[in-house]
Structures are given as structure tokens and as C-alpha cells.
Length: 166
Image (cartoon, rainbow, N blue to C red):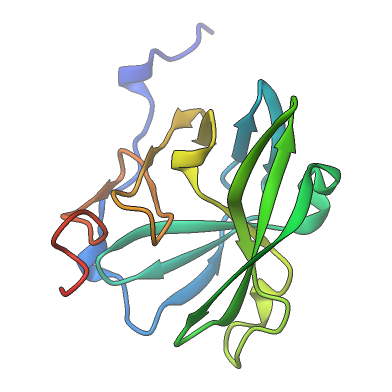
């Protein structure tokens, strides 16, 4: 039997980010999630967690054992999410290059978000490429949220210029 062409593959239903909940929901996904920087695979998993929040594309959190942690070093940056708690940031050091605040994690997430503990989320706009299955993702506009835009997610998305007050 021959292989299916791309156009014949079953597609996933489209999701509107305006149907996502607030407060955000955490859900497991078995889709393959990969992060590439400096020509190297930094993370590769089928055990990611997706965080879905109204007006934002999903953010993928990768289990620490599926990340090349030797490439990360702590950053001094911290931010507070009203739902998830205090995020700590990590620089990515790869190929003689430092990508500042490339990823973040929650060491002590707030109640309801304990499953995110120590999982790492990467800003796709700071990486060479990020993938969900074999699809290269687009970065959420702006420099604050870090969402991953795939063909099965539709906006408009919060994050770009003039949208922080939505």
C-alpha cells in the first residue's frame, strides 16, 4: 500500500483560542514536540503538557528529562503568573552562543498547576525552529507569552502590538 499524500492525511479539528478557558487549563498531549537551536535538538518529547488560555496559542511544557538540561543555565529573570505562580527563566548556551531567557519553568506552581512542576517551556521565536509533530510552528506575536501557532489553531492572538489590554 502506498503512503498517503499530505493532502490526504486526516487533519485535526481547528481550535479557536477564543474557546480556550480562563483560568488556563493544562492537558497532556502525545503529539511530538521538538525544539531546535544552534543546529541541535534541545528537546524532543511525546509527553508534553499544553497550557490553553483564552486568546493565546498553546504553550507546550516539556518534561525535564526530555530536555538537554546541560545546555541550560539559570537566568536572573523572574515573572509572576496570576494562575501558575513564579516563573524562573533559563538561558540556552549552545554552539558558543547564549540565547537569553530562552525557556521558563515553575519550581513551585500554584494549586491546580502542580503538573507543570519543573517542565520547561521555550519561546519559539528565540529558537531556530520548534515543531509540533512535523509542522514548524510560528511564534506568538510579541515577546511576553511564548505561544506556539500551528495550522490547527486560529486567532486573533493576544500578544502583538496594541493587544496587551484585551
